[in-house]
Image (tube, rainbow, N blue to C red; front, side, top):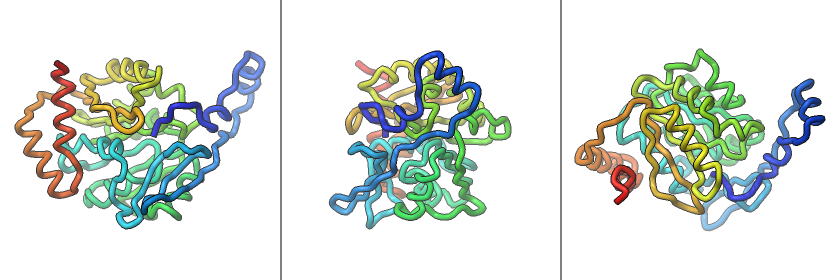
Length: 273
């Protein structure tokens, strides 16, 4: 989840000044990560990166469910793609999206990319993340390197991006180059969902870059403390809202996710008046 203030990770991973920049260019630095910490309240376990701000959550009685509303909205692509062959998550968090997709789509390949090894370890030990197998592949890797790897281009039906405060390359996620590389990883009718933050300068930069890289970008209504999920289509969609509401009912029946609210949000995005 994107937060309103600079994280410990961001401060540790960014240096300023020409002398320091030149020194860093000579010798690649090992990324510095904030401490991974936990809290629990009312049967929900939360992930933090050394601050009080929540980076993910899991209800202890329902470890494979998606607890947070913005994370549920990251599944809006289900309105358009019923059975993905291969989907990926950039930024593991508590593994909520990865676990849900792995359990829900039993024929799909599921890839998760996470730079911080401590996050992977805590997901396995405290958030019920399954071990890698023939369908699940959790990779310790920089997300930018993943999307730039030509072996991944044209392989994904769905790409879910939630990378804030998770890597040493935060600023590159605002760039058209990053989102172009994401689009290159998608198949012809692929869809990207991304967690943005409405009350922050990065919001406008991300939307501009997304709209450069994708044919169509729509935003759902803001939830939580400013989280805004954007849905980016590699090819522009002709939205049939009657069909989308029918599909939303199917999703709700199968998963209990509030899919009708997603359609409401898409409708509002198409007709703001």
